[in-house]
Length: 142
Image 1 (cartoon, rainbow, N blue to C red):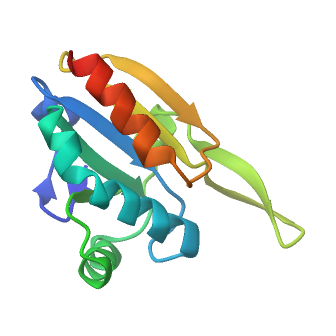
Image 2 (image 1 turned 180 degrees about the vertical axis):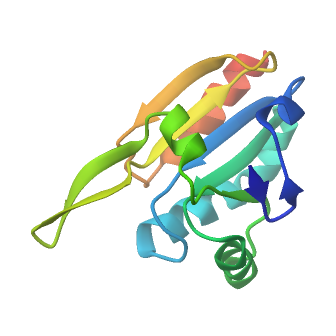
Image 3 (image 1 turned 90 degrees about the horizontal axis):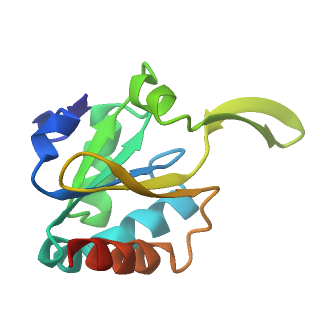
């Protein structure tokens, strides 16, 4: 999958824990707060031997603007084909302004150093979420 730092495979993260968080859209209010929260705790995640990867269907150009505007400190993956989104079953029918639309359900996955998903959060509410994931990463690292 393509990231703002080049092409990445999930296998590139083996040997380290990985947080993969799926979010609907760059530079929208909830997604911005979520990105800022993961960025604020990024050093703490790294101390827990945990990489962070944000995923949306936005383009790399959009990701680069989002990262630059908000000084995010981790990689964002572009998944316009929804390959990764479908693999993690995060595409859902949602109601927006009375219309049914298909979009990403805000979801986070904590993957251990062997590539096994250890924790899953679906339908995430942003406030306090990054801290909850960080605590889970710290426990898993022990």
